[in-house]
Length: 189
Image (tube, rainbow, N blue to C red; front, side):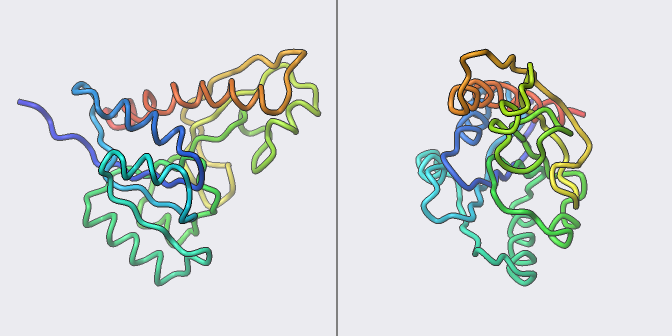
């Protein structure tokens, strides 16, 4: 008997490379999750095209994302039996009010080795500080920005000839590998 796959929502703001990686993994029979819903705070995020191409329901939230809208979205996600929310380049901070609907069920992937370089411009800051390594971190989302319990990390060596773009590309490649694997392990536990 095949076990039913766990429903996942992915929140995006941009190109959707991590969304695509999660979808590709979910299409495998052996995978224990499926992407059932995609939420974006930008109506023309490229990731929405990826979701539509894969026949995944989408929702665009307002810039303000006030309490009434948060409650409405939470109800939709609960009705769709969403078990985990994956933030994948989602450039909006979720309020404690919204997070309370999904305690320990919201995870994020961040392009640095947390706790270093929380927030934006991580690659620029790592290069400016002459770090030897950068990488990515998957963590639970908490009330404080990029401060939730760390689930997994992947180191990426910073090369002498690295630019922000080159480093970003290599870190993103590792993000795309790590996120689907970690999500599957979280669902199994």
